[in-house]
Length: 246
Image (cartoon, one colour):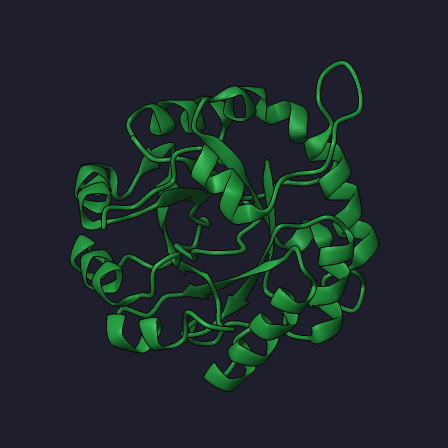
């Protein structure tokens, strides 16, 4: 199970979630008005910090649709994942796939509103365009997307995951005390891991190592006893079949 914590803005947060056992850290760029928005230079700096931990990979989280600009931020010491969190069409995925360096993974968010996936009719097109995996997340009552704290019900997750041929990450209101509400999602053969934001934040609004560690322990707790920590992110994603078209 991969664990991603999203919205880091400081080197201390990056180091803290790595020490907590995370695999991925989300860095926001191209999220207009976002509380964790970073400049391109800051994304590069924090991605290098993540790589220096020896276990953490950086994820570029964006509403952007300029494939060339996004690809230029990846590779080398930059983020090795790109998470398209807006309503970008499959053509953006296709263009990005053609431009990113080998080994960079593309995540397309599928937004769920009222129990229905907004992009349901485009799932196959996203897969053909080169999406490596999906992230299932809920839209807020006001239409807001990303870090809404709204859960996607477990039954809805299962139905949506069954419509895809790619692994999926789950987001939306996930906490250390509610893993059992998602037993079906965790048991799904294409379940790849979780994406957490608010449940790992301290009173200062920053990602908190203790809160992050609590989430990691709770979600990695297997039925019947202790379990070894996760494998590196790229290895686990590959084992789950997350290999976009090349």
